Amino acid sequence: MSDSEAAAEAKRILDANFRTEQPVRHFPTSFRDDTELPAYGTTPPVHQDDRRIVPAWAAGIAVASIGVGAGVTGIGCGAWLVLQGLASVTLTGVLMVTLPFAGLAMAATAIGGAISRARSAVTKNVYEGPVTHKTEIYNNTTTRGMFFARTRNDVR
Image (tube, rainbow, N blue to C red; front, side, top):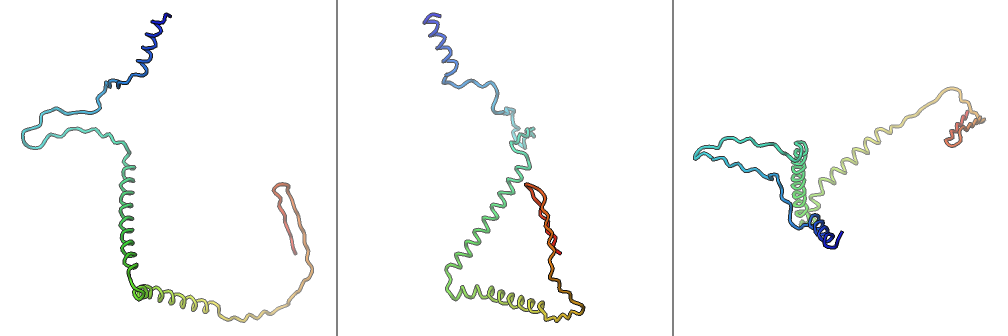
């Protein structure tokens, strides 16, 4: 191949692979309805294709998560307002707010103590019958297995 032919082939390859203009698309990217609208009244219904990107269940979950997020945000704002109000109160106000909780804790402690004392009633067990006192210990130990060994102790 001569130098002029090689240069022409190289120019053709570079133009084909590294061209800067965008290729022409031969398919429509949108649809425009050019039918005439009536001069007055409502327009006639037009069929619209259903081309959803996500399934209906995913859209439902997304809507539910937005609702939960909004609800949690409302609860957080309410807690912030309550805590801002509690941060600006005096010692007497704080004691008055905590007084019902202290009363409930004291009542729970008293009820728990009463139940505990009622459950531990004094019983005197009297055992009647012969008592046998054995001092001999019979020990029989058996070990089986190598890696996963099992030991059995029989004490009588």
